[in-house]
Image (cartoon, rainbow, N blue to C red; front, side, top):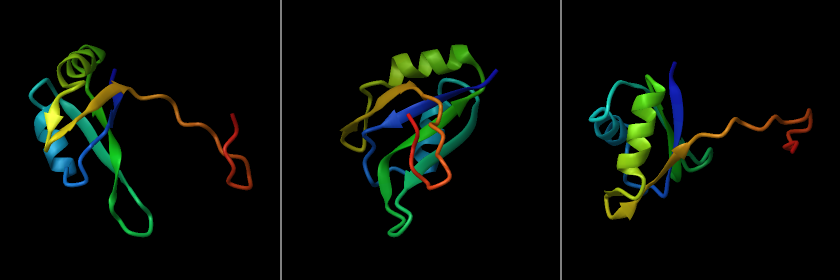
Amino acid sequence: MSKKLYVGNLSFEVKEEDLRELFSQIGTVESVRIITDRYSSRSKGFGFVEMASEEEAQKAMEKFNGYSLKDRDMVVSEAKPRRSKDFKGKRRY
């Protein structure tokens, strides 16, 4: 079963290909997505990496949390589920 990881504190220069290459050192990467600003298309400095198994995800968290990539120390943790939005676009808690 795949496991999604949150990857934060990314340099604005980091591309999805960079993360895919880095995390594939641990195992199979199912998907990579860096979140961008809707208007400027500039990275928001965080993204998500989905690993093929929980074991690979755990190894990736252990190895890459605090890992320096393009002069920034990444934060890698288990991704939390998305919060739902109500009909007006406001987040419910």
